Image 1: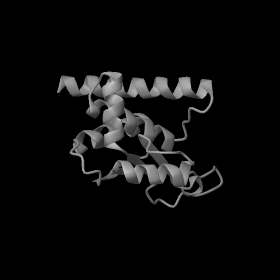
Image 2: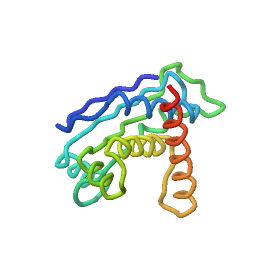
Image 3: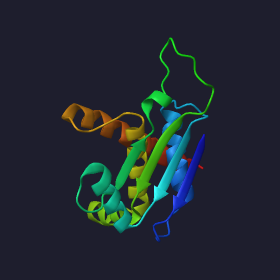
Image 4: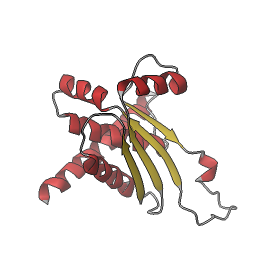
Length: 156
């Protein structure tokens, strides 16, 4: 699986761990190993701009997910695949926002970034939390993926 990561946030983060949790979550979800994903870490100002432009929100948010056009990824039974790797899309993270949320939640900024990475990956795969039932399903899956990833890291 090809995962590109760029840290333009000005904050030092463990990009290897972010890559690892993203790869783990996508593998566990059965995503094609030829799939491509981009992860971008940005500063608060740029995240606020993206949030306003794409989501109509005010101020910075913690994570945004920009899925590629679904028509370029999914092929129905009557359509032949092109054999090209699927472009999942982009996950944009704001480490400074994550750090504030982590402090409020009582865990590390790294743990918050891992959670947000999995959250963004699930959004790229079509999960949402607009409705209570969707939220329960997505957050349960997110928690299960994070717990099993963390357990696997402690063994090695």
